[in-house]
Length: 155
Image 1 (cartoon, rainbow, N blue to C red):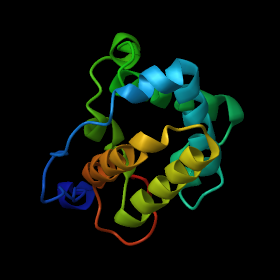
Image 2: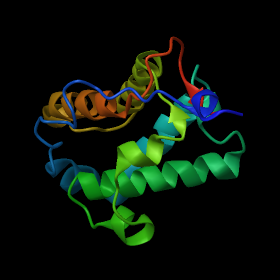
Image 3: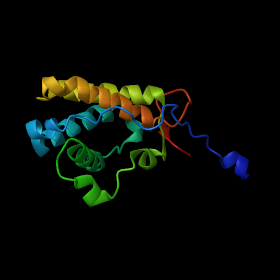
Image 4: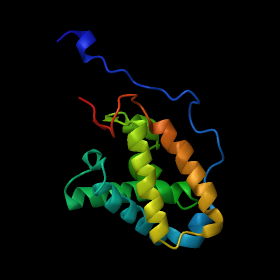
């Protein structure tokens, strides 16, 4: 094939990387590592049954590993030990997500699944708005395709 046919247009959000405040680090102190892991397991359960399920492992073991990796990231992000960096290296989340076509529609589904998971857990009410603001900003930076639809693996 020609190089032109292999070219994939990558969308870069106009605002660049997230500029807002980080999520409240008090969340780790309140929920602890297990609480954050439970939150991410719930999130991934919802993702597995969503319109963007094709972006995630279909087998239970693979889905659990993905939820654990994501939990490592959120434990670190929310004030816990640097588990993600220790196990997987620097986060560089946008680069890690480049193999997948992430659309605005897919981002909204992801956010909806996260909000549902937060609803189902003992997430500290006083930190929910700031956490959701962070998720909104963070997920906006993950969008890498203007193609319509919920997204999927890049070919």
